[in-house]
Image (cartoon, rainbow, N blue to C red):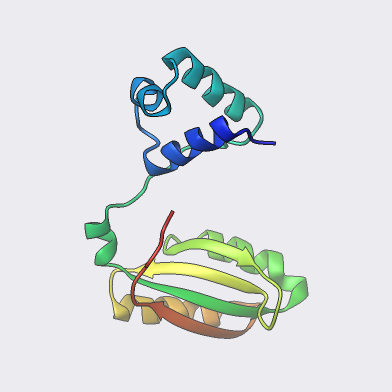
Amino acid sequence: MITEAEQALLTLLRADARASTAELARKLGVSRTTVQSRIERLEQRGVIAGYGVRLSPDYEQGLVKAHVLLTVTPKLADKVVRALEAMPPVRTVHSVSGNFDMIVIVDAPSIRDLDALLDRIGAMDGVERTSSSIILSTRVDR
């Protein structure tokens, strides 16, 4: 269970994981020691599993992003996931319910590169069917 104070801290860390303890403490109205101990507790409990990089909007604006829906052969699903994981343009792989088995979020520097990536994914052993949608804009990204 996450407390309201921990949730507020997580919200700030999502916006800027490199924010200093002093800055977080000031925004939360608590001491730096309190912030540090909350972060340590969240890490120990596995709530915070790591820290990552958020790309700048200017850089991301130049990428062509897409959602690729996959139907896969059930016995080959693990093989498909491993192959997707090895592809640098693949950002996220979701297992989903419904008409498709997975949603894969990808990005590429150009339409030509995206087209080649989609061909590679569609030709993978275990992928039965794909459907893709190019992302035109992102309205909310937390």
